[in-house]
Image 1 (cartoon, rainbow, N blue to C red):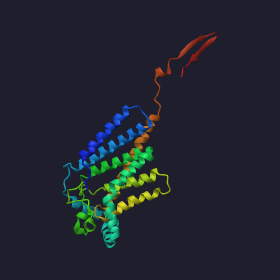
Image 2: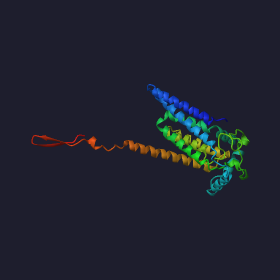
Image 3: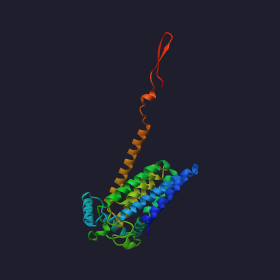
Image 4: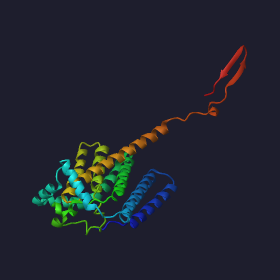
Length: 291
C-alpha cells in the first residue's frame, strides 16, 4: 500500500493554507466561514502527517537493542500475568476466519476510521473537535518521540514462537524490516491502538446516541488485531491509551486556565476610577465618585 509521502502532504498543507487565506480575505458569510475552518483543519492535519512521515526518515535511531527490549516487554507482561499474545495467535490460526478478519482489520481500518471520525466530529460536533484534535496531536507527538527507543514487535522474535500472521493469510502491509511506510522496530507504543482509542473514546464522549457505546468495539478489535497479527505487544496498546488520556487531560487543563484568564476582570487603574470630585453646595460638601 502506497501512502502519501511527506512532500505530498506538505504541498497539500500549503495549498489548503493558501485556500484558507484567500477565503479569509473575502466578504464573510456562513458558507465561507465554514469552508475556511475546514481548510485550516485540513492544512493542519496534512502538516501533522508530513511531520509524522519525516520523522520516519530521521537517522536518529539505531536498531541495536530492539529485540532485547522486546524480550524485556514479554518478560514484564508474564510477570504481570497478562494474557499471552502467543495464545491469541494460536487461537486465530486454529480459527482461520477470525485470523483473516483480524489481519484485514489491521491492514485496512487504521487510517480510514480516523479520517471518518475526524470529519464526523468536525461536521456534527464542532465544539468538541478541537479537544480531540489536540489529543490526537499530543498522542502522535509522544509516539514519534518514544519511537527512538527501539522495540521489536512479537513477529520479529520468532524464537519465542511468534509468527507474522500476514505470511499465512496474506495482505501484508510491511516488507522486510526497515522498509515500508511504518517503522517496524517502533512497536512501543502502538499508534494503531492510540488512534483507535481516539475514535472510540471520541464517539462515546461526543455522541448522544444510545448506540454510541458500540464505538468501543473499534478499540477492542484493534487491540485484538495488533496482538494476534504479531505486530504489537499488549503493553504497546496500554501505553498508547495512557498517552492519549494524558494528552486529553493536558488539553483540558490548558483550556480551563485560558478560560479563567479570559473570565477574570483586570483590576481598574486609578485613571479608570477617576479622581474624587468635591463640590461645594449650599450648606455643605458632597463627595462624588464616578463609576
